[in-house]
Length: 409
Image 1 (cartoon, helix red, strand yellow):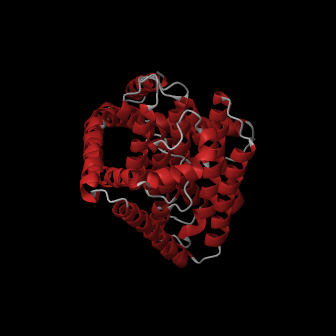
Image 2: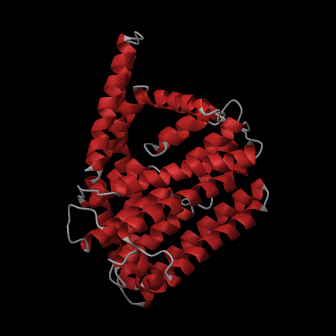
Image 3: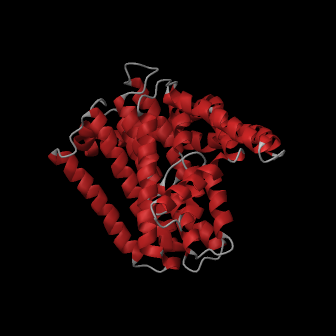
C-alpha cells in the first residue's frame, strides 16, 4: 500500500516540479528529458531482468542441490537458536532459513550478483509459510529490512571505482562505510523488532548479535592493518575462495547423499528463469518512476532545502554537495554510482569525493529491493516494510555523515 503511494508520488512531484521549471524558469528541456527517461528506464528495467536470468538460474540451481543434498538443513540447524527468535514464524529446518543465510552472506561479501537470486529464493520460501499471500508477513518484513540495510564488510565495487578515478588511497572509505552500514542495520533491526515485539535482549539473540558484530569488528581491525593493494588482493581472493567452497560443498554433499546432482541443478535453474521473467513488470514500473523523479530536477531542490535548513541552525554544510548520492542510492544503485563518479572525478581525494563514496555505501537500493522481492511473490500490502527500509537508509546516511567527518573533515 505504501509503495503504491510512493510510486504515484514520484510521478506527481516530478510533474509539478517540471511544470514550475517550464513556467517560471522557461526550461523547455525538462519535459523532453522526462519523456526520454521513461523510455530509457523501461528498457533498462527489461535489460536488468534479462541480465539476472543467468545468475538466477545458476544460484537457484545450486540452492536446489544444497537443499536436496542436505547442506541447507545443516546450516539451518546451526542458526536455529538465533533464527527461531528473530524469525519465529519460520518452522525449524525450513529451506527459507538456508536461503536467508546464503543471502546475508553474499551481501556481507559484497556479492550483489549472488545476493539477489538468493534473496528472491528466500522470499519465495517465506511466501510458502505466509498465511496471507497478498500481505507481507513479519518474517518477510524482517528479512527485507535487514536486506535493505545492506551490511557489507568489503565495498569492493566502490573501491574499484575509486582506483579507476585515481584516488591516492582508494580504501580509505572502508571503515567509514562499515560504520555507516552498522548504523543502518542496527536501526532497521531495532525498528522491526519493536513493531514485532521481538526481545533483542533475549540471551541467545543478544549473544548472536554481539558475536556477529564482533566478527565484523575483527574483520575491520584486520583489513584496516593491510595496505590498499593487499586489502584488494586479499578481499578478492577470500571472496572467490568462499564462493567456490560453498559450490563444492553443495555438490559434494549431493554426491554423498547420492542424488542426481545435475538434474537437481536443472530443476532449480528452471525456477530461476521463471522468476526472472516474473519480475520484469515490477522492475520496469519502479525504475520508470525513479527516473522521471530524478530527471525532473526534484532531487536538486531537496538538496538545496537540506542546505538551507542546516544553515538556519548554523550547522556545517560541507557534506551537502555529496548528498545527492545518498538520496539516489535508495532509488537507483547505478544512479548513485554515476553521481559519485561525477562528483569525485576531478578531485577523488577531496572531502566531498570521500563523502560521496561513503554515501554510496551507506544505504541500499531500498525501492528496487521492495519492488523486486515483493513483486516476485505477488505481495501487494507491504505493511511497514517501506518505513523500516527507509529508517535503515536514514540512519545509514547519518552514520555516514558521522564517520565521514571523523575520518575526512
